[in-house]
Each structure stands twice: as C-alpha cells, then as structure tokens.
Image (tube, rainbow, N blue to C red; front, side, top):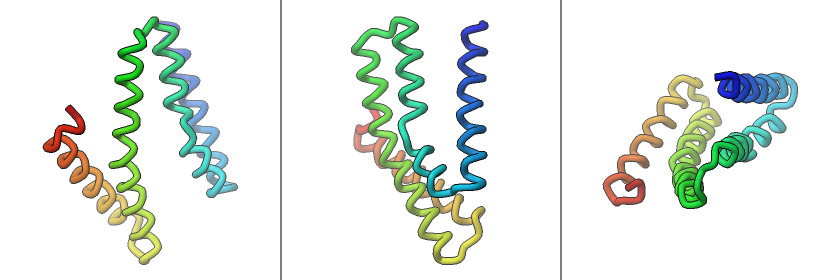
Length: 112
C-alpha cells in the first residue's frame, strides 16, 4: 500500500511541475508533456513488480497504438483553437476524433 502511495505522489508531483512550467513557458511545458515520462515511469514500476518481458512488450505495443488516436485528438484541438473556437468545443471535437479513431481501430482489429 505504501508503494502505491509513493507512486501516486510521485506521479502527481510530475503533473504539478509540468502545470507550473506551463504557466510560464507553455511551449516548453508542451514538449515536456509529450516526453515519455508516464511510459518510462510505468515501465519502471512494471519491471519492479516483476513483469515478464512478453507482457511488457504487449504494454508498449498498446502505448504505440494509442499514440495515433491521441495525435488526432491533439491535432483537432490545435486546428480548432487556431480557427478561433472555444477550448470546450475544440476539446469536444478532439474527443470525437479520438473516439472515431478508436472505433476504427477496434473494427479493423488493430486494438484486438
């Protein structure tokens, strides 16, 4: 239980640090956010827990596959914001793009 709490607090501290960075340096914070911090931390925890190599490879494949819908979400939000849309409607458009991409991936077997 303590190990889980340490992991949660460590993750929260990273999120807070990026948020604080974003207030002063939005581009740098965006770059840091795109870094594979969460993936690296998750892999370290999985390895510490004795995760077999095959399961780790499956996890990382899921990360790779998940990047495509996430890129669509972010792209839709950026395009709509640059077009003058509100953040809420831009985020909604991004979430719709993400959901469509996930449905397509499920139906084509990419996420199976």
